[in-house]
Length: 265
Image 1 (cartoon, rainbow, N blue to C red):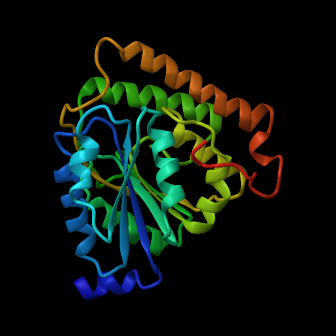
Image 2: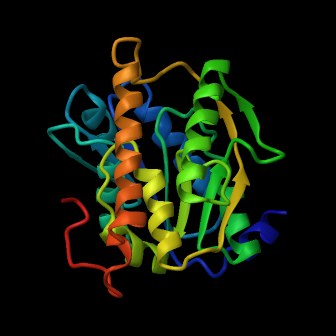
């Protein structure tokens, strides 16, 4: 079985996995070890790129202790948002297939292998983890299911995506997609996933497929009752900005070549 799996990945020369991390001092060491263990089960050259989004606790120090030739740790002083952290990590990645997985391990990292299999099976440009896949195993609070449904409905109305679930923190991209799409991105926080797909659609990357995941909500979240509605408002505002750029100003499609800007701007 292992040989068969490995053979299916023979076209991947180097896999890069970016792990954005925000205030994860409790779990970051375990997260890195679990992801490393998962990637080691398949004989693909790989690198892990951990991005610590703000020196706000001991996340960076604890991650740095695990750095080696395959695990690279980067960080910066001020928190700038998940979208910024992922873009920064992708700017460091050298792989011909590049993806990201959220730290905290709500998402089982063994799903990485499932996404890679789907990428090869469908010759996909982008593979996204999906809570709505028929064989996904999801343990998710009812209130979050309702919020996910609401946001999903809004984004489908605005953008017409065929992908049903856009928000899972597990996605993989071909290098050609990264090189074309990521320099055009502008969102640093909540609408990052939507913007990636919006730009990809605009540039003609339509081979986008969903893959199953295992998700168990741990309750470790940066969203609290104090900032809940503030975050919901920010998500909607960021999403409308993406809609404005794609549908109104046609910003993403203005030039045939990606603009020469810093991904980490």
